[in-house]
Structure formats: C-alpha cells, structure tokens
Image (tube, rainbow, N blue to C red; front, side):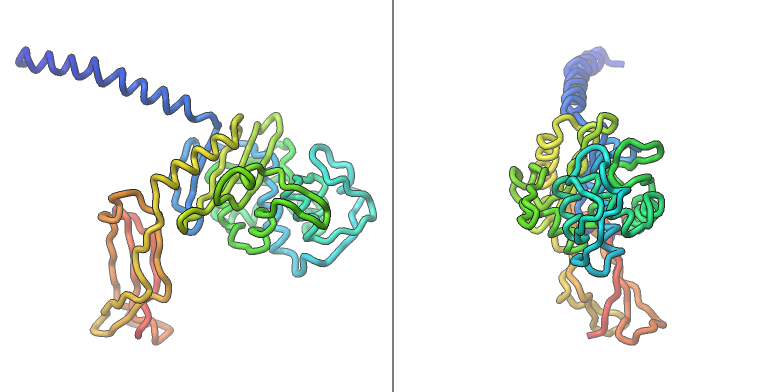
Length: 335
C-alpha cells in the first residue's frame, strides 16, 4: 500500500476515533435513567428510546393503568360508594381514607392521580375488580388493548411486588391509550382539585410549557419514575423515564430535544382527490405524522382498488409508507 495512504489512515484514525469515544461517553453520561422512551401519541411513533424494552418496576406510574381501567369499568364517575376496610391504612402515599366514608369514583381518581393515594388505588380496585387480583387482571387486559405486551400488573398502586413490571415503551403505550379518554385527560391535567383541596404532585404541569400531565412515582426498588405528556405545534408527545434520579430535568431535556427534532406534518389532505378505476375518491380524514427534516422524501403512497367492498362507497384503499415501513392505511371513498 502507498506510504502516503498509510499515513492518512493513521492520522484519520488517531483524530476521529478519540472523537467517537468522547461523543459516546457524552451520550452515555447524558442518559441518567435506567430506561427512557419518547413517543408521539397519535401515531405511536417512537421518537427516542433508551432500553425501551427493559422490564422494570414502575412505582406509582402504575396508577395510569389503574385510572383508565377504573374509568372504562365505571358508568358514572359521580356515583358514590362506601370505602371498604381493605382500602384503609395502605402503606405509602395516602389520601387518608376511613372505613365507611363515602367517596365518588371521580374523587378517588383525583386522589389517585394528583396525590398518588395508594388507599384510593385499592378502593377503586375493590370497587371495579372485586379484589386486588381481580382488578389486576383487568389492568393487564387494559395493557393488552393498549399494545403493551411486556407488562404485568399485580396491584393497583405500584408498591413492590414480585412479577409487577413494565417497560418504558409499554408505559408510553398505556399512557397514549389512556389520554384518548377525555375524563382521564382532564384529571391528569388538573393542577388543583378544589373540592378536596388537593394539589397535583407532578411538577411538570407547573414548570413545562405545554405540559398536560401525567404521573410521578417513587419506591426504593423502582427509583424515581415519571410519565409526562406535552403538546407543542400540534404534536403531542408522551415521555417515560424509569429509575431516573433527575426525572424532571431529564424529561424536560427529552421533550425539548424531540419537539426540536420532529414536526407534525400533514401527509395527505382529506380534500385531496385520487382516482381509482376512473372514479374520483378521497379520504375522510387528514393524515399527519411526526417527521424529521428530510423524511418527507421517503414517503410513498400506494393506491389499491377494492373490487368487492361490502360498502358501495368504498372503492379503494390507500397505504402510506415511510422508508418502506407502513405507517397508515385507510379506505378511499367515492365522491
């Protein structure tokens, strides 16, 4: 090999390799959580992840699943019921329930999500699951509906328990699912619940511009955990950090980074007209997706005729891919 080429290879390696090491060390130093995930809520696209599929305890962020499971099993949140003795004196954070007191489901949900009441969690579990095991089964069914397939709930509050775990990715999926419920969204976004004089413990609501919730958590086993959600420029992100000593600072950093890196782009307008077998057609919804700069060039759209549709107005299907990966499919309707 030419001597000059060998010299250039040596210089390039000597200069570039230490730079790679410094960049890697800086990145590893910046990650202070055991696991992290940032997800765009509507599309469920993962924008950033660190050990996103690692199974970990999650402390009181468990109560996100508790709340949405209770809501889905409750026909009327205003309806009141008596507190059973099993829900009184639960260790850890509490709203200090007493046997025989009357609370509405709504009150207990605010106590659960704003004050992280473990006793509120058990009261809801007995009300909507019959007992802790019965309600945990329902919570696991909720997780499956949300697409969280690597999660197992054993209790409604997140106190240490063998076999009680989730992942940062799964917890983001559960939260994205829960935020589709308007009552859940209203509760977790409430700073003060005046009927009971409760202040939300989640500092993100007070500190981060665009924050809409969601839930804090801490045990010695799980460390500091936080699921937060925020909206900017039409894009809504869910951020999960597990065992993160500086959970508020880290969540702020992650949200800022991903709001800067991605924008919520309209890929197809519902007014856009397509032609299938000579017939004009269109979607009935706009299609948006979070994209990094330059990704729009990797979008591909495929139109397929439907010959034997059960509904006469449906004449085709549209599939949208990003870098050969399907991100949306839907029906095209005859104009």
